[in-house]
Image (cartoon, rainbow over all chains, first blue to last red; front, side, top):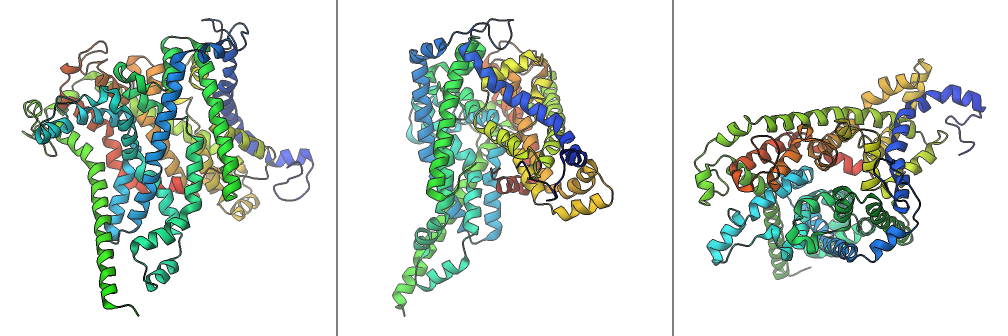
Length: 311
Length: 294
């Protein structure tokens, strides 16, 4: 980069800046903004190693080393949150990774173009609905007294109403299914784009050879989009620790906290609610570091397997 | 040559296949739409019909009382106005900053571009985390000001990269011609690049607007109740921490009629639902051109 010139002509530094200073001028404000709001908090993580005292600045007062890390390491609440995060993420991955692939394959098979368009348009929409609205609607649908779900159960099976949103038994299932509802259509776009890149000749040849629809899916569609599937899988593994924090927070009740307290909600509670800033920062930093290791690891894996990574 | 039996079997199995496909599609349409229809019919039904569990996909004892009521609540009106403000001003600030950042960064050969791109991409995978962000916003004295909703989220890296990738597709010839015509880089950006970027700006603008419209958590940690956006207002109704009618405070969940809650849900989602079909193509464009690549 040292000698790279926008127009390929060797320029002295002075002429270079005389010519391009406006491009740098443009960047000044956004770059400054970017450094302040993305990088200062990153260095703010130093607070995990320093004691915070109210009114004494955001960087803490004195160095305490790994004290806060040792503390959460021996804190059962942390390990509970850690386990809950892993279980919920894995469950979500197992259920919600294959579903959009399947959905995309099926959408692609819809012959009526108008109907296909309608299905696509409608299925993307939940992605843009606020988490608050989604959980509020869910609360209504599953309400023990007036929710349609419990009413139907009572009418058909005569069973007693269940307070789904408050019952730790159902929390994980509800979380995962809401994700299915909200993101299936949207995630399928990527697979649909990959499918539309498959040559029609392949299908024609297969039809002539006598392959039926299901055989075409297994022998043409799925193998053709395998690279996309792999990249998406790796991306998902990299994001394993970052669950929908807002959704979990909205679904959190003291009654389901045994399973719904994840790392992010623990950080929120110990940090902002109880104002243990340093302790919460230490937990957050720990999970951030695991996150970056997962991303880097899965990216290396992706490069090795598909020759392509995400960065 | 295949036998006739074989052919019949095949058309038969393909027919079953297309039946299954269409059934799955109908089911997903039903699954996506029913929750909204249910809310819509609850909001137009009488409290009596709701309490007696008579309402499903169509309103019972149709009336608009709940809508009339929520529009008399100053709190709701305030929150709605706040959300409009955050969405419009937030999106405007965001677009300005991102365009000014993305255009220079779309020039691969600009000195320093590679390094800044690395900073941008790294910050997508490792963030400051909740507490350091909170302490930053609070030490900048933004807490309890509306700026706390607008400023910390003005640049989203995904949207930024989307814009950069788009600017890269604009032919350099246009720029060179503009330079010969005597335009400087600000002029090129304003008169050549932006007029060609309508679709990309619409896409990024929509993503940003949806983000601001839906945001509630930042309101929760940074704002006082008179500044709450409508989503936080709704969340507080649902959790029972605030009443619909008068000022925020301890309230009882059961005091808020379901029809009113539903009316708030519908009114706060309406702009997205109404605009969505018209703007849908821009939403989809983003996910396809925004591949996360430096």
